[in-house]
Image 1 (tube, rainbow, N blue to C red):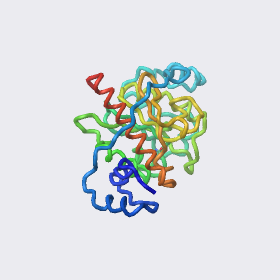
Image 2: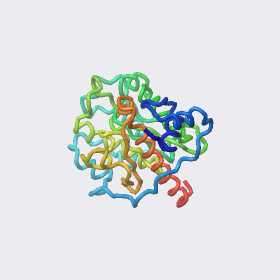
Image 3: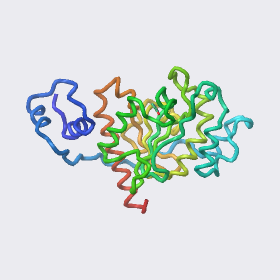
Length: 268
Ligand code: URA
């Protein structure tokens, strides 16, 4: 198998040894490369808008009156954090250790959206701190990004679709996703990122309102609330399917290209 420079750069940056046989020439190049070469990024297409524009108000309308988080559409960060911490709108509140709100710079240029807290996240109160999170951190590092809150250049904010751990890490249920959606959309509205990376089926379904497979949504620029959204596989999926890391690297490059273009258009 002949690997492209982009694939080799991705593997190097993510600290991943070759996971299938490579031809001797590629192996030799990989062994001697000390510095990552510039990685060519695909040219983004025009943003694809979801069939219906997604607004917090619309998402709230879909919830029964008694379960609407009151005033969420105008909450500031402290109010939103409080609302999430005390949320008892669905059954997940009964089994959680704590809610997992989000982490990173609150005016970040990149927003990463995952699925739901797992065991470690539920214990520590921070998204993506388990094995999938370690892989996510390496992916971000490959782009020179960190989740640290204190970055001067406002790098990354990470949040999940669900703020509470589903028991035994089962998949989120549609009513749970619907219930938590206003919180995620408000987080997005407050962060105002230049680009959103939707990781995995549940992030994609929640943000883009589609049941289309990730494989068919990748490689395009989608849009939610005027913000470009790039679709990619979840890091937990990559732990099980490491050969697809090269695809995710392509998605990260596309996100970076969109981010750079948006930077050229605005001061953020
Ligand atoms: N998977 C997610 O989607 N989110 C987390 O916070 C941890 C694992």
